[in-house]
Length: 245
Image (tube, rainbow, N blue to C red):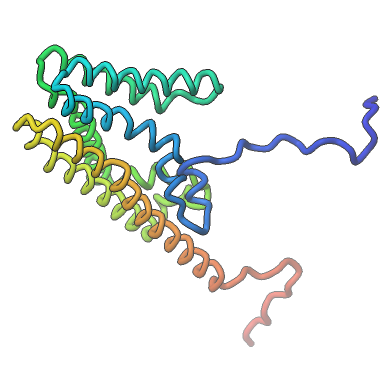
């Protein structure tokens, strides 16, 4: 028998607290910090590109700028590992930065540093468009996993419309990135590419995430009102209505 007195047991372990977008979808107030991954997420996302641009403009050396960009991502990865945090997001960034650094050093063109990011944007746009054509908007699939309140979104015409529009917003963002960055890449505008990538990165994502959050909250509100106005089922034990003569 357990020696622990009744009523003094610790709380049963529950599911791990949600973080990031999963937590944000549950909140009544929008948090930019949650949307972009907090201060650390901002630093990890912005630092490689910012460092590359500054060092390239200052030294005109692709090798120095590329090496510094890779080094800062490696440092972020090591810090996460030491702190026993998930390195998944940093690993993805490291692959993109390392590949861009290799391309830039091999060609001697600083603009090639941005090629992997532009290719990723093109792939993301293609996936979003395919999901729209298939009538399974990617934003709906994503939110349906993160928020169990709308896990049945595909069976609700209102939810399908909402997440279709939300997916179109993200598709528009990636299309805008390509429309701005591809011409700069072809023209070899290293500094302008860096500025465009930074401006159309986290700030633009935060704006779109806020709009999608508003759409999601509005959908939840409409669903709640529909449930409240629905005719309640007869409670058990209620006698049936008298038969007509």
